[in-house]
Length: 193
Image 1: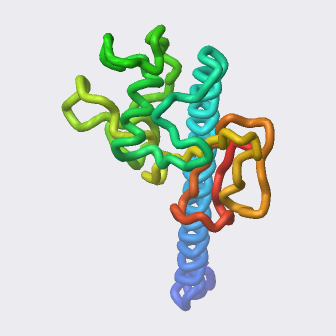
Image 2: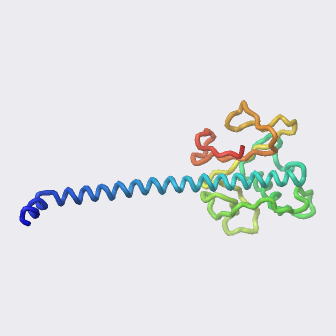
Image 3: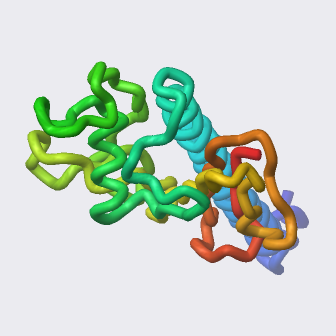
């Protein structure tokens, strides 16, 4: 028994606890990275869900009315923040003022995307404490606005934003997000085509 106590006093117990501590720290670091991976995966799935919903919204409008809303630039691109986006969202929500020349005469609510209070959570954002005002925009979970590109009137197809020499045929609109870095570099971008 005294030999065991002598070994413990001479550092074996200390080495044992240091090894155990290092193992615990390693497991904590691995868990942290696994958690970051889960969060990023969730954000990518959420982005794809919003992206798909936004695409179906504009395609639904096109299917019912046989055209895109008048406020969209044919052959152009629209970031889903700012005044132009607010105008489009008002049309897609069926909330245009009655009596004026209306794009959505039937006042159909085409847009059904989860609302958010914070831009970086992703979704349809309204001004803070002003639910009676039009929406501000639609954002991905990294706080960046979604982008829409529309078909030109000449039928030449939509220019691919990531490969400008390519055209996307047979679509009225494409939707994309610049992903976590918010830059059009195609490394982490998400798209509907």
